[in-house]
Structures are given as C-alpha cells and as structure tokens.
Image (cartoon, rainbow, N blue to C red; front, side, top):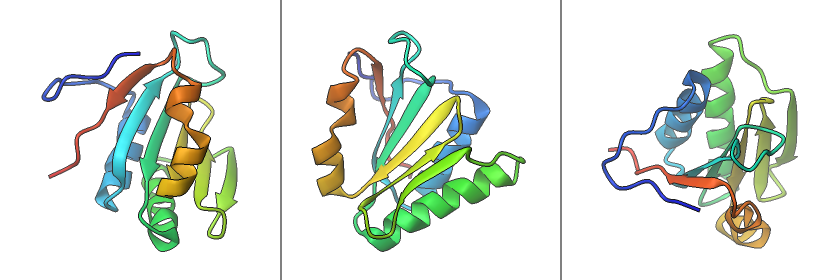
Length: 125
C-alpha cells in the first residue's frame, strides 16, 4: 500500500476526477482513492469520502451524481441512503463510497483492500 506524497500530481480518468471535485465541493472529508487495478478488483477505483452527518452525506452523493449526469453518466447502481450512514454510487469502472465517520471506521475499506494503491487526496482550497 502506498500513499501519494503531498504536492504530487495524480492523474485520474476524467469521470473519477469530476467525482472527486464534486465531493470536495460539498466539503467531503478525508477523500481517498484506492487504485484497484493492481489488485485485480472488480472495478478500477474506489473513491472514499466522509461526510460529517446524514445531510452532508446525501449532499455529497447528489453533487457527484449531478456532476457526472452533466456528462451523460449515471450510476448503474445506488445503495445506502439517508438512514444508513453511507451511500454507494457504482459507475462500473469506479465506485464512490460516502460514509459517516462511524460507518467508514466499521467498513474499513482501506484495510480490506490493503493490496490496492492508496492515494490520499488533499483537501481542496
């Protein structure tokens, strides 16, 4: 597992970057990308973010959906919701996971996929 150095530039597919930007635009915290390609996962990337409360989790998910829908991209599958503490948006090549702090700790995707390359995304200015 490797972490990106601060200040290093990472290039992601345009849709993944658009999702990251939309999440950060709604003040998502602790945004991490797991590059699952070396781990031969069922998708290429996980984008993992934290919302402080249910309202923010929903707002982050809505912002991601709206930003990608502007480009004609819709999730193939959505799970979770406003009462679960997490929302998953599946776009086939990448999956967005938005968690409450408690749900993120419980599911521990970064540990579960420890053989993936971890890329910490700096908070947007």
